[in-house]
Length: 215
Image 1 (tube, rainbow, N blue to C red):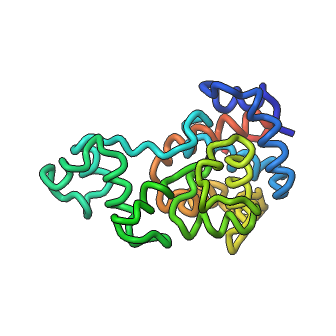
Image 2: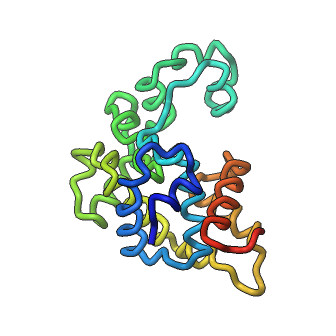
């Protein structure tokens, strides 16, 4: 279903498109992400989340200025951000501690369970749930999500396991608003509309590559 040429048509910067194609095909088939409209949205989302499938681990290397922009409530001033600037481990344990099943900063959970995979699975609780669903020791070995097969499977599992399967939202129905649906999916995937312009760019490219009409 997914070919190297299709991957490169959507994500021209992907460095290992030939290896990704069969893993995506297998994962998407397993979780029934097969409708072309849903495929286009799925590929657009993972393109942004993983920097065109070149980054399988969250980048937490921020300047103090950028920290104030990304987490304004946690870092209201440059002075409050400075101790965490270019300090990825400390930052992860600051912003992810006590959330998503993580313990406090002293447990190192924020760092251990930082975002990984094509979807950037984050937090001990999410790793645990995924470990049970995929029957993998992700809690003891979270780096498994940086392996292509598991990175692809984790993203496809997330997509299909939401209370409302994201393929249903992404499908092109006669009485729905495709652009509004795309924003809904983006919010579920990312928690907001961060990178929405890039997500739309990849969505347009994916639809063109799949022979779908423009939106």
